[in-house]
Length: 278
Image (cartoon, rainbow, N blue to C red; front, side, top):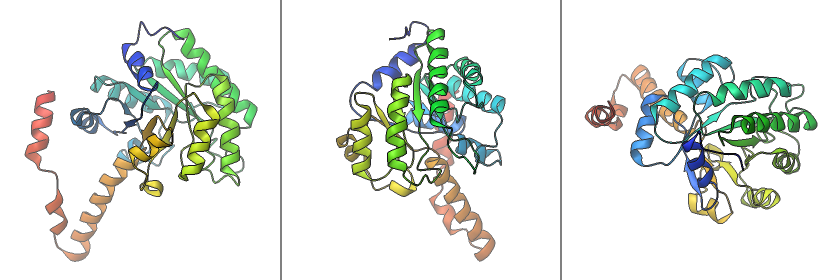
């Protein structure tokens, strides 16, 4: 196992994956990171979409250096381990992945993910062997750093509407496991039987499951019973905030009423949270 002497947060984060099941919520700015730590969560993860929306950009439109600055900001805000949603690593070839992973490691993260989504409609997933080499390059960069940062290999089959997402995910996640990923993740899977099959295929490596609007009916205990070790919500919390904002703003514009503001968070409570932090 890689030494974690230089990154205590990474050692803590790695240990969290060894047994049980934990929720990894996704803040999108300093304030939400502070609040999630205050609630008692044990680790956090960035969200590419949540951050992009907060800057008036679509998911995937945030440049590498801007994303690195954001990841660093979250890592420096909290005492908790932070996992970086590093998208596809901002490079196609393994050499570029290795270089960018080194930049991401310098932000102070305890974990990071590399996905196989090309962002291209004609070929939405990287060719399998190239995708494996990209994970292998990320693994080598982490090992050389001796930080012990947790590497998550992501297969985006469900999100790119692959014609046979389960087959594709099982095949690729097993290959990413062999290439050195510490945790495996196929965002979009929602069928309990399929989740259990993914867990069995990559065992004993831990599996992350995304809970969002499409599979919100699955509880922490149900996912734990399926063998899931880590649960993230991606842009779910950011979208919940956007949902409340959109409904209230539209109500004001359309109906001229302010009824939905009755559900607002008390500003006094937020002042207390952030006053304690400062």
